[in-house]
Image 1: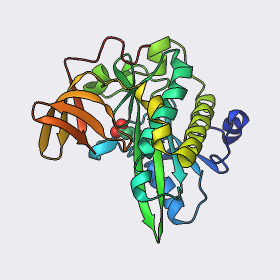
Image 2: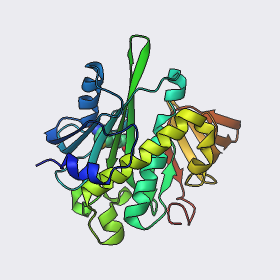
Image 3: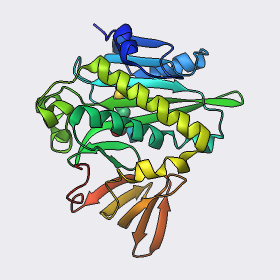
Image 4: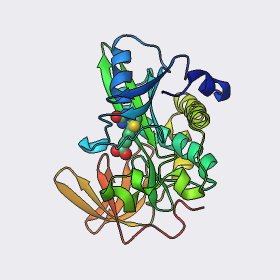
Length: 269
Ligand code: BTN
């Protein structure tokens, strides 16, 4: 049984998101469903949530384990009237919103690992996959969010167990999924609104205060190249700054490995 859209609406505080909420029991990927809806002309703010996914997708061609009934798998269709380059910042905008919703259910301060992992106590609790499609002169973006809520350690594939956590593992208490979905969509609605009005530079402080990489030694895979150095924050264009032995670098897209662990307080405040 899928979640109940009426239950989500009961708690939802949003202007743009949630006019249409589809809750499915099972699907291949909510991102694929939302993109299909986008191609068919569905309005901005259409939401697709599934209880489980057969082919949940992560970044960089990875899969996203999606066991039934315990977590949130949610995709939101956005139609920002912005240059595509600006819309490319939406994963960072969504990261702030997911972290804010996670705060409420874990009684912690969730951290952000560039570009868009949400971490608590140094372990990943949520991931974001944004996919953009050009549609005539305009484009739409599907913001896909996977949040580990009520899974125990065994709910994760063995290889990611040491790196992952859930709200239940953090607090010992289960999270009401419909309530969490409403909190997440409300937070995303507010952050998206701010982004449209004031741009990402206005959101940069909110992102930076959760940045768990700042001051860490990192190794970043950028295509075939590996950049090693100290992460020093992100720019107004959403790029990761790394001080490497060969000088300062600004990285547009890449996969970050933290060398020697996060700073002690990262994602715990
Ligand atoms: C990542 O960290 O690699 C991103 C994971 C994104 C997973 C979510 S779950 C809902 C939506 N549907 C998908 O197939 N992927 C995203």
